[in-house]
Length: 236
Image (cartoon, rainbow, N blue to C red):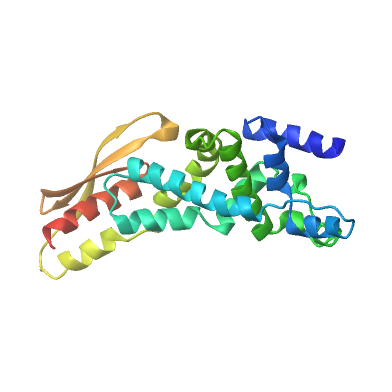
């Protein structure tokens, strides 16, 4: 038990939250393989699947509210893509790795020896359970849960948006413009603001020198996509 408490204390420091009731975090860290092992010793232990269920919902609403507020120009379909690509097993396992969640898990011997501490599915589920544990321990305080979650997941959101993996508005716009001979489409950088690590770029999409779209983003590529998205409205 001392070993468990030491791991929990270290984890609390890494996530910036100290639990009032350690039952929540212990349950969040407990895998079903450990609970099943304890049953053979006539000891009932609660494992993290129910917390995982709740954490999945808490995760979704926090991320949904954040991208809804921060990406006001994006339609529903693009917001859905962002959420789906950051609220996924691969990303959650990565976040779990950042807080060294795997080494804190309570696993059955077979699961532990079989690489369970590094298995993406186990780490992702435990991360959702931990989020639910913070939510419940703080009195169902969504804002407090967001304080734990957002510093970890926001870089993933920004990275995905900046990657250009969403709808390729520039290609769609170019295909439309090419249907008319002699039309010249270009993207012009018209402004930059903010510090180097959080710079915002402003771009205009111009057709034959006429401005048909304005865009902004954390990269020139993202700003151009945003300008092309707005410009497409002229052709629909």
